[in-house]
Amino acid sequence: MKAVFRLLKLLVALLLLLIVAATCWVAWFTQQPVRLPPAPYELVLKHGSSLNAIARQMTNEGVLSEPWTFIALVRAQGRAGDIKAGNYALREGMTHYDLFLMITDGVTTQRSITFIEGWTFRQMRDALNRNEDVRHLSMAMTDQEILRQIGAKESIAEGLFFPDSYHFDSGMSDLEILKRAYEMMQRRLAKSWENRAPGLPYGSPYEALIMASIIEKETGLASERPQIASVFLNRIKLGMRLQTDPTVIYGLGEHFDGNLRKRDLTQDTAYNTYTRDGLPPTPIAMPGGAAIEAALHPAQSKALYFVGKGDGSHAFSTNLDDHNRAVRRYQLGRN
View (spheres, rainbow, N blue to C red):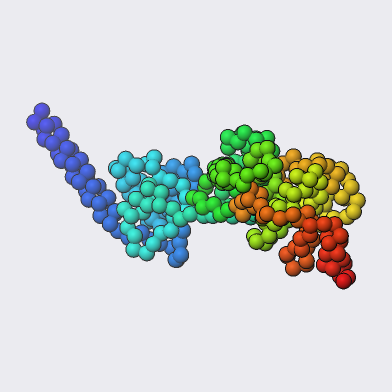
């Protein structure tokens, strides 16, 4: 029995020695610098990767010499479930412990995507689908399914998203980005609607959004947007049709080849404001903040017409005779 007891004591001592040695090894490991590949180096951790898979990835990429000590470090800290997907910029001289804190605290380098004023929702979806840093969940969804997923009440997606640059961690889903853009538009539109000018002929903020989308497509000059808004609102108040080309083009859809013809202006669609009264049924693009402000704070004028001068600006007229003269001058090249 004494021999067995001595053997057990020896085994316990050896186990304690191993535990102390392992602890010392991990402690030493935490303070060692990370082995970085040639700079600049960015570590990309994908959603759904396990601790073991991440440690093997860092070993394969030359960041770790072997995966097991790093795995032990993370598990000893009880943070195996805290590792966050994303892009991480590893710096020269950082230790393994620095690396551990970085990926468990989620200190990522952010990506960005920009949605341009005047884009359609289809263009917006194309930009998301092409972005390799985005986790694509909506590719196979219809527009209506996307709206349901992000909690939107509307049934048509056009114009509901605010054009801006959105920063995100690599691996964020397209639905999350769309939800942010949708909520941003809701906030911006609600604020502008609350402070709108009196006497405007809109029945709802959505109608103002439709007008803002038309203004957005009609001019790229911020200084002209309130004047463009004034023309359209003056027409509505007089019972005139809007007669704006961008709505016709939108209604033609994929049939539009870049050249708007006279027959297109007479082809009736829900968006042809030459053949139909009032506003089209939905926005025709994403309006920016300036276009929304113009729709809700138009210039005070009696203008009813405008024509492009050929330099991006427009000539405004209060009557048809003056408008026809402006057309001859700027469009037909005659005095």
